[in-house]
Image (tube, rainbow, N blue to C red; front, side):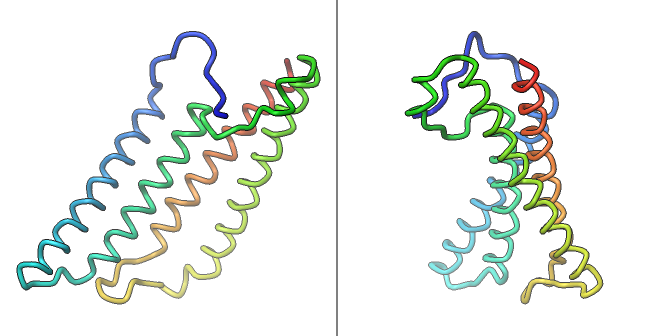
Length: 161
């Protein structure tokens, strides 16, 4: 069961709008790349590197999607236990969930930074188009950092009551 927002829906803030635009643009690039590649196969020409372009666009789109989900507080949640406890216990459980999520994304962030630092001097690139992967790693690192920070803020607000 998904957690329902309380009260009226707030207008999107600047960060939400920026992430929406980035995600939408990346999704459009992914779909256009794949559509051109499929049409090209039927018309007798190949779009070399279409898979690489699609993967890079999909990385940006999915990173934006998970940041938007966190900003909106719309991650999937099961309320089997939480709906049957007192408000104080409920707040403690939600607070612990936010802390665990912040820790999980902080660990993903740390691991991603470690890998990026380790591979930065190698100038790792895709096979056909030679797209540098370091910049796309930075997209994920930024997304993981934002998500960890958002969960930390949620934890702090929930813990303060």
